[in-house]
Length: 294
Image (cartoon, rainbow, N blue to C red; front, side, top):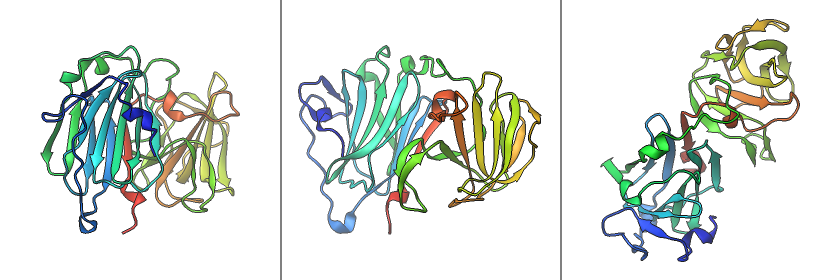
């Protein structure tokens, strides 16, 4: 459940809808059990500079901008989000996105911005052209922020959808709480996996611990990248690799629930970090429908 501080009246708030301006809350929409609604996806798309979310049934969201730090908070009345609070780090302009439950009948979406990103809340508009599907175009000040600054140095290893982020989670197969050491990117079986940077194949083969067919690449600065669950490996140990070179094909080998790439970054060659910090940001996609069991 979200921290109640984001509802604190001491923070400066500005509602994003006609009829919802000011600091007074809009009346929540009540749904009968037969009308139970759910949040299905939440997307931050840096290429389009916008956020999008979809609902099983349409409602009117409530939006507000809160300062210190600046963040957009969107409450979804009548939505019972079934799952833990999910937070994904993004980059510089947009620092993170979050999804969680603020109370038993309200789900909450949060987009947090960097301290140096400034905009007029009046610039923000939530729009719905199709029932249940909402978009919010973000200000140009967000688009102009350097989302690829800092440590980012690699290209993407695969074109696909991020289905699991870095961090502690309940393993979908074992049911045990463990650190997910990388990110999972879903893609069709056989799609090419690409090296994110120049380097040498330091290891490849089969991992009995659950990764299946894998490739490990060591880069000139001592960092390593790791690619797992491949259906087929296209390189050999000791081979020189160029950035963007196909090194394997997407599969579901090892402990896996479907075709995808498990990708890790080890800056010192030993310890894993969130790969998102090293990749140019394109989209953050949270597929939330999987939290529901029909």
